[in-house]
Image 1 (tube, rainbow, N blue to C red):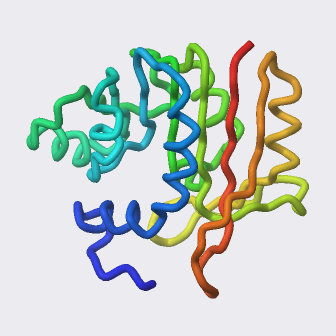
Image 2: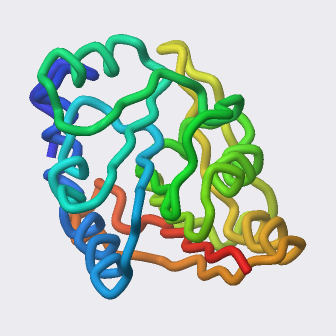
Length: 194
C-alpha cells in the first residue's frame, strides 16, 4: 500500500509501524517471557509505540535526528529520549537493545550490530524491513539522492560476524503478510550475549 503521508512526519511514522504490525507482533511475542529492567530502542522515531508497549519497564529511545527527539520531548512521552548516533553513543545501556528499519539504512551494517551489542548488557533484537537475503555473500547498499543509504543485509555476512563473537544468535525469515509488489519477508536478528 502506498504511503499517504509526508516522509518522516508523525503520521508517516505511525503508518510505517501499522503496515508492519505482524512483524512487530513477532518481536513483542519474543519479549513476553522475558524480564527487562531497561530497554533501548535505537532509531525510535516519532511514533512512540514501543514507549507505550514497554510502559512497565524503563524505556530509553535513541535517535540521531534532533527533530525526532524534540518532537518526543515536546509531547512529554513518559520515557527518556536521547539524541545521538548509535555508532558513537557512549551513554546509557540496557538489557535489551532493539531496532526496526535502522540497519537497512546503515552504510556499515556490521558496525551497527557491534554498536548495539556494546549498548546491550544481554539481548539485541534487530528487525530489517528490506527483505531476507540468504543468497548474497555480502551486504549490498547504495546511497540514494534523498540522502539515505538503502542496504540489503546479507544473512551469510551477519551470521559470519556473529559466529566470531561470544553470543548465541538466530537470524530468522519473517513473513510480512504483504502482497506483491510489497516486501514479503524481513529479517529478524536475535542475539544473546554469553
